[in-house]
Image 1 (cartoon, rainbow, N blue to C red):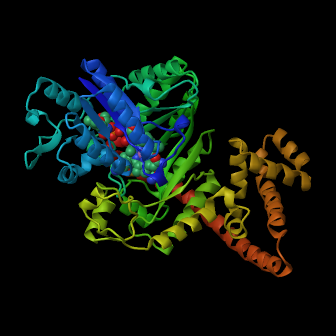
Image 2 (image 1 turned 120 degrees about the horizontal axis):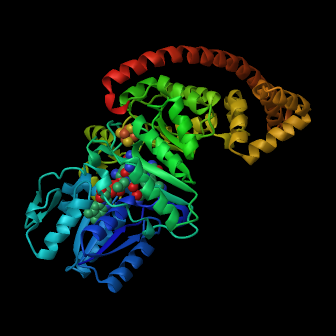
Image 3 (image 1 turned 180 degrees about the vertical axis):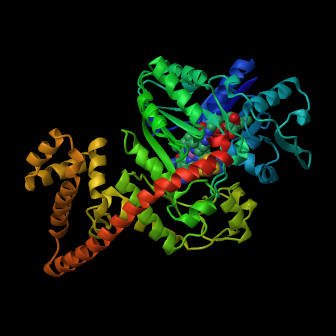
Amino acid sequence: MKVLLTCTSIEDKERIEDAHDSHYPLGLAYLQAYLQKESDHEVQTHFLNNVDDVTCFKKMKEAIEEFKPDVVGISIMTFSRTSSYRMIEYLSEHNPDIKIVLGGMHPTIMWKTLLKKYTTPVIVIGEGEIAFADLLKHFEEGKSISDVKGIAYHDGEKIVSTPERDLVKNLDDLPIPDHNIFLWEGKTIANLLTSRGCPFKCNFCVLDNLSLRTVRFRSAENICDEIEQILKTCSTIQTIWLHDDAFMINKKSTMALCREIIRRGIKTTFTCSARFRPVSRELIQLMEEAGFNHVLFGLESGAKNIMDDMKKGITKHHIRYATSLFAERNIKTTAFLIVGLPGETQETIDETIDFVQEMQFNNYLYYDDIGICGIYPGAEVYNIARRRKLEIPGYGLLDDDYWLTDGDVPTYTCEHPREKLLQWKEDIRDAIALNRVTKPDAFLKQKKVLSSAIQYGYKFGMPGLIGLTQNALQTHQLFPEVLYNFFAGAPSRMMPKIGLAVEKELIKQIMEPMNMEQKKEFIANWEKQTIEDNETLKRWQTQRVEATDEYISLKKKAKRTLSVIQ
Ligand code: B12
Ligand code: SF4
């Protein structure tokens, strides 16, 4: 049979139109590889997430006319669902003989609702490799699909679902995903999964719907075979991104992977998203040796209550401990924040700013963007919003049928209006985003973390910050002293002085366009802020010392209760 696989256009405001270095859907790469190994079907995959819906539609029409598939499989995420709907409608109307199969996160969760709207597709619920191959075999042999596990479809007027299919137990049994479809010479990023699943259930996350909180790891050998294959296929790859649900969740597996990468002499860099626990000095050192140079953390909030309600299983102590360990190595750390999670208030926003700045002071955490809590079906926040009957202008009350409309993924506005959430987002950015440090208000909020920002700038080569620091050193004639301390083996002794010099340079820049009145006001605010900053710095110092003791006792407790992640 001829099988055409695709993932359709992501909604406009979310789409990144740079296909060159974009991430790609590993799910389809797994399906393609599995079908190629386990069947004789002719499979073609089209990656259309990054194009607008007109182009997406045109490319699919051409592919259908040329390839003449018997089956079209569409991978759907919530934010690509509307272009997928258009595809289903087109296929049902113009090519009714082609069988439509849907899979991915959105259909896995919303299969019932989807089948209310569309009668033709068959939906594969959950992991797709084995179920899809089984379904295709039934299609080919003309057999009833009622005994294919893990699917849902229309049987006449009735919507039926078959018994759940077991998750893939041993991930090493799956063939290595087919990266060739998504990689070409010139591409610098490749994607990889070392595990599937996460034992937690954060209130904004949907991932448990697919892997049912069951964590499975690939062997280090199997992963390294894939890495070597990627690097052989595409010589321009510089970084491999690990997209696991929860990479680093098991120290032993992470260390085994690092050791195998080192043993094989694999030469590339790795970026991973990760949790703040479990970590250890030994693990982070091994990661650096293996080539990990960027770790992205889901911090989400720095407020204790929100952290507890979020159910991520992470406390401020874990974060303090992890950031202090990462500060010792040359691994860039980025964190993500979400504004507007349930329970958010002005106090929790202030607490988040304070905590993030404290972390930035220990080891500068860089922030790419700050998200506003979106409501994805399958997440706890969606259930809360549904219960509270969130009103979405133009769409009435939020219920499952909302996802049959073309509406955007709504934000969690049960507790605060969107404008408030946007304002909080801006407040946090003012307090932590380096590119805002030349704005008077943002400067005042950020000045206490300047010296660690400078260290970060030098460590990871940020030209703007380096230039600013060089100028400050020159103007304040600090070069001889810096050199002296460098050769005396105590370069960090100079950091407070360097920080102050940069602060003075920034003050000069900021005050230049101001009139006398504005200058006076700014200086008064600066003085007030400096007194506050000194208090804050003292408090952070005490918290850090206290945190170490508390962390040790927490770790002992965690070992007993959460053996799965230790
Ligand atoms: C890589 C990635 C991206 C990449 C690429 C997306 C892609 N097309 O894969 C990019 C960078 C584009 C991306 C972006 C975003 N992402 Co993203 N992303 C991921 C990530 C980390 C990995 C995806 C992956 O490779 N999974 C592994 C494969 C094996 O699983 P899979 O894709 O689900 O496929 C399996 C099954 O679903 C099924 N299947 C899948 N398709 C099909 C099709 C058929 C026909 C069949 C039969 C079966 C089938 O079989 C596959 C194999 O078992 C996931 C988290 C995760 N670990 O899954 C989030 C995830 C998909 N992203 C998510 C979100 C929310 C986003 C963002 C909106 C985040 C944000 N707020 O900015 C943005 C979107 C905006 C944008 N700018 O594009 C959510 C999606 C929620 C939802 N309901 O759709 C996820 C699940 C993360 C989460 N914690 O909630 N993301
Ligand atoms: S730890 Fe990460 S993957 Fe696990 S539930 Fe929370 S957000 Fe989702």
